[in-house]
Length: 309
Image (cartoon, rainbow, N blue to C red; front, side, top):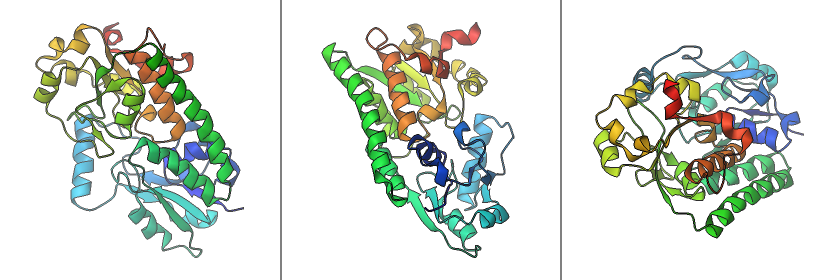
């Protein structure tokens, strides 16, 4: 059987979800807790530092403009692992190490592994990456069992919303606080499955800076704040950047206490299981009278009203 390394947290999560972890050796420093015992092959120069939202945005924007990466590979560790396959990504060079950087590191190895880039843009694409991973190791059937169970959970949500003729909620999900970024890629599809629509989003495309005045005019019924890489607790530290903006108190979502902080990994970590968890959470936030938030997910969000508690 092949030895695999994962340079993408979402791929690592799906490898464990599908029961393929016995093939895995070598992950990134940001991989989920299920892989805590794995050797960390990929590191970041910002690891362990506590920068503000605006500082992080400036650092990553500058590195991108200069054509340099903030991520690096532990060459000696990777050489000792000698993987047959490395899963990497080309969706966002800001959030994770990309294939170009990986290829540069791999070129130094005595044994050349196969590089498989996972590049999902939509929710459907994310599901397809699970099949891509399982097929690469000759265990495609693991992916179909995994995805079948997730599809049933999604069907339950859509069937329940349809049965109750649930109104579509006008939603805004922020991927960053300062500056404010809308949501892109698969997140608008998550919102749709949960019974909402985000008219400021960019489905199957990159998130972009969104002017505050545009958000005020849009006036969302429900506002979800889930900055990439931030837990709910981390987002709390920066909520003052939003609450001090002109017109904040006038937003419908604020007046009706429908502003929520949520953990990033339910949205910007594109493993199929975490994104379905995110759909279930959103459905509970949009339509609590029909689909309460599952007990297991209650620790992954809080309302803005609890910030001042």
